Image 1 (spheres, one colour):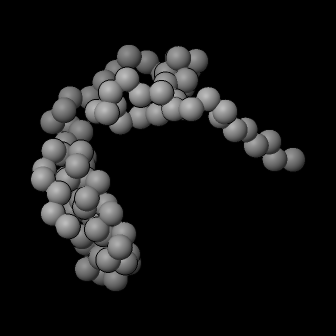
Image 2: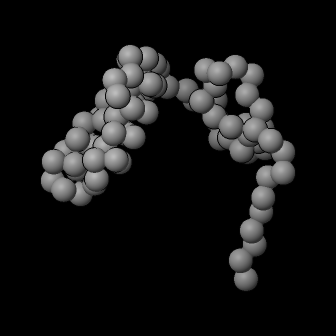
Image 3: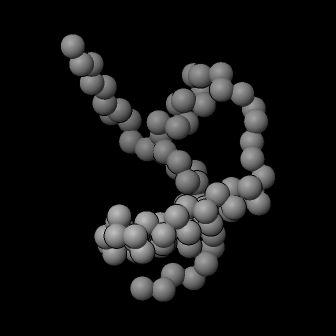
Length: 85
């Protein structure tokens, strides 16, 4: 039996710079997952790795141009680079 839950509460974001929604906020509230956080440099490095992997996967024919562009755009936005479309 599959139990499907839906969140009827709209996502609440304090600012436009907040990159998570209501489900993440509730998880942080109700699950003791620790207080560890990562440095900005570490997160930026992971974003750059994700961007590079997307390019390699595109070059190998594993993802479409649409997926590549979506990943690159998201990574650039997170890294604060100007969007080039």
